Image (tube, rainbow, N blue to C red; front, side):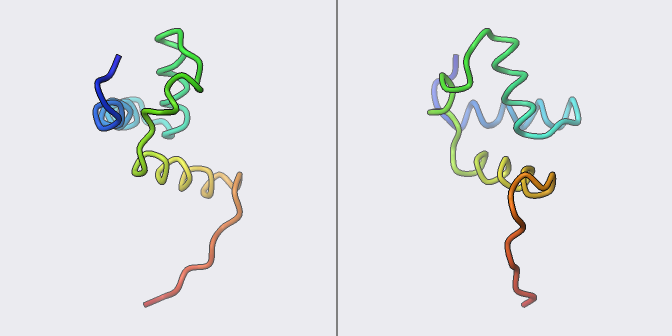
Length: 71
């Protein structure tokens, strides 16, 4: 298991780049490979990882797109 959320996040980042998958898929695959429930690792999901998962969901149209300003 991981010592902190940053270590967990780095592991998920490695999985995403190595296996070419979304962040949510990487979290779920990690849970499956380690016989964990997603709620067991919720405390390890830091703000950065949460934002990346949210962006994946927006790109997949699971969440509504947010207005962005062109600055």
